[in-house]
Length: 121
Image (cartoon, rainbow, N blue to C red; front, top):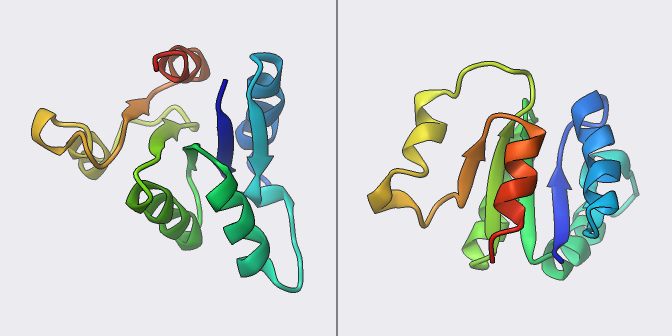
């Protein structure tokens, strides 16, 4: 199973519940949106390095996109979850076009789709 860095706003109920859901699926999960620390960058970096997978739960603050980019730059699998049920912005759809698949592993429209995507090696 995966070691997942969950990128979510701390008040997003989907992000909070998603951590528990992924744990029941056997994944180890760190939810960056639920932790605060005086040295937040160093704390987050430790878990960004620990993770082998990232999940960006939209909507998210700007810092979440930096974490997403860091994970991808480390050649880790990264997924985008459209948690609010809205349609994907064109930029997220373009992330997974065949010639750009290197940027995002998959854009998911709901939690079951994300769980299926995470199960593919």
